[in-house]
Image (cartoon, rainbow, N blue to C red; front, side, top):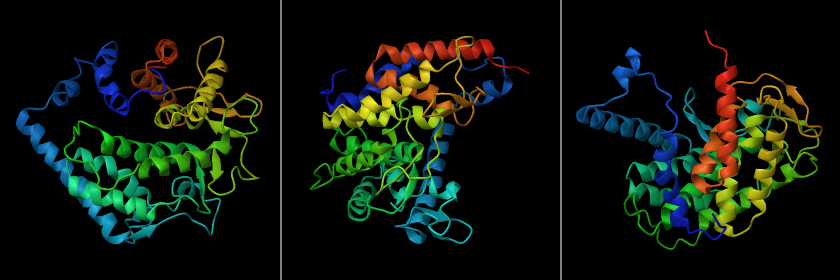
Length: 325
């Protein structure tokens, strides 16, 4: 797919190919009684669960907007907003995720659209353009900032400019690619993570104002480095600037070339300077899972045969070596 591909094509390409591709893989077990019981919803049950899901989302969203906005998230115990822990920079459980950029509001944009709440979607977009900025003294994890902030901004942008408006009227008056500009700004602040790494595998964290911290680790997990190509790829195509997709794909290729010559498996933690696995445990759990997820999704979205080839080879290696019992 060329960099000039239309945004409409980007928006629908996943849906067009997903059924065809995913039908090649059978993940369920028809003999499992739980699978038989829960793999099918009657129409009445589907509608009931649909409304229950809508109510659950609205409850959480309203609670955040009432008690926490414009901070990143709602602290449910104290019923107040929460952002980065500036007093304790080593508190990475909080600081990796929260960047002082109204995270929950941004993450909610596409869900508001999918739920059909056009009026609140449009209001939320306006709030994002008014409150969200990235000139913050925050050090965030590249992986989290990418999948949660960058992905959310790009998704909402594509929903707004979709000429067919498949989710209802989600067009925003006086919208001038504001979310795309925010996404561009954020991605540019993440780019320093790819500098000064001979392997092309990025540092795990960046300061949004100063680049890679002086004390940043030279190690990252496989997911952290290999789960960037969807968002960076879409951004490159929208901007017609290949840099973002190029650095993300280089990281994936570097990780792939480090796989075991014996098993075909990847480790879960790698030294970004030497390319040595410092975490040699392979599997499908945290720290490695989304690397495989993004290989398949990248093929579905962009149509690059190399992504599908890597996924298929990984899938076969995992099936062969997976410990059972």
